[in-house]
Amino acid sequence: MTEFRLTHAMRWFGLLIGWGCCILNFSCTSERQPNIVFILTDDQGYGDLGVYGATDIQTPHLDRLALEGAYFTSYYATQPVCSASRASILTGCYSDRIGIFNAFGPESNLGINPEELTLAEMLKNEGYATAIFGKWHLGSAPKFNPIHHGFDEFYGILYSNDMWPKHPEQGTVFNFPNLELYENETPIQVLEDQTFLTEALTSKAITYIQQHSQEPFFIYLPHPQPHVPLFAADGYKNTQERGLYGDVIGEIDSSVGRIISTLKEEGIYEDTIIVFTSDNGPWLSYGEHSGSAGIFREGKGTNWEGGHRVPGIVSYPKRIPSETKIEVAAMGIDWLPTLAEFANASLPELKIDGVSLVPQLTRQSKKLPHENLFFYYRTNELHAIRHKNWKFYVPHTYRSLNGRQGTNDGNPVPYDMNQLETPALFNLETDPRETINLADQEPVLVEKINRIADSIRAVLGDQLTGIKGKEVRPVGRIE
Image (tube, rainbow, N blue to C red; front, side, top):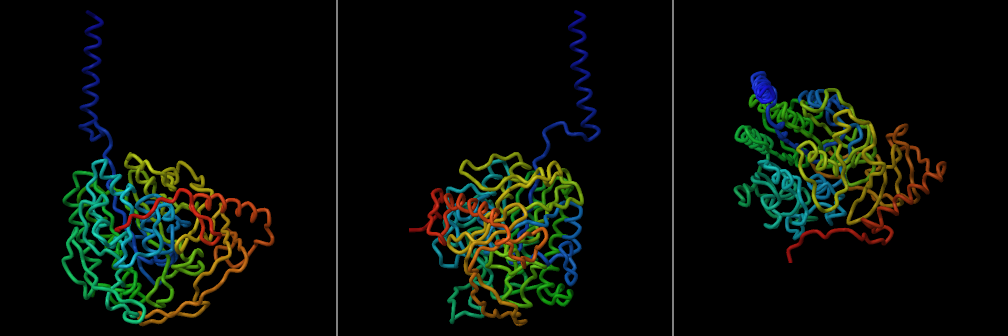
């Protein structure tokens, strides 16, 4: 009898403790899954935010987001081109592994393979509401529409904003059809002017946050800007020292501020992960209408540092300490496993290449996420390898302005085609501008990295050497 009374009393004591926790606003159930807002810009360079060194563009909201959360100083877009880079973000794979190369045109029959589990599908499986507001660029044929790849809602464009009849080279190089604004699978407007688009995409995201604030949600917000042609709303024109390009970045910064304010008004800011990054470096041939790679060499369309190294900012107040500066190298392949760990979601069954960055973001580890990162371009050419703090280049052709400047009128100037004749090796710690080739002075290291290059060629291939990858999964096609 005494034993029964004691057990009964202990149960009541446990219940009282539980009720007390609820009254004191402690968690009585499992922790809420984080909301995720993934903001992707197009062709924004490393040097286009204040926190990354810009002095002629004011970006207070993004600077504050970085300083109150985490920011990477060696974050890389996986490829220096649209479709391939975006494929990596949404699948966690090198785009060559899944057969996606370059940038799809409006009439291409190529797109993301239905076999791939996208970031949206992964989170949807965990009960997330999912939406994309912005540029898709992973296939414009109906079967590739984002609605068929994990997104509940889509509002935006299917490919780049310059793929329209107003392209400066329309009729001579290109013959683009009309650029259409889509709502889910339905085109709702032919775009003649894109001035309204950044605000419209932001408002869509804000409405979605308000509608889904009581459940976990994933918003993918891939802005078409600052890809040329540039458009800034009237209230942002002539507000930045960097001209129209700076005005565009200023409007995007304001968009981020509006989203943060909405999250705070809904009481869910602490429960929300915000990622901000770019799909590749600046398109330098557009001169004053392009961004800045900062101190780094070259830009979009090359595997030099300026083509890949871009801003990478992450905020999650519940888990990521403020003023977290991450100097180890990470890549676009890492977002899917990182967000999977934060959301306690199951990873794809098919092999991926990324790893979770949660240990680095939460200051549990300063270890390199990857000892090696691989830089491909064109259809399937391996151009470079980052090994720890070294960047190694195999001989290849690449485009460059060779010191020339672009124009200020929105028209591109032609690139020169340069040939890297012999291997090149740079110490990024002491020479981030990649000016001093140490390949002849480090023969043992060159031999080691060449062996590393052969190891990835055996998997993903390399057209430069004629080696075909053994595990590359084909891109989805319409026959």
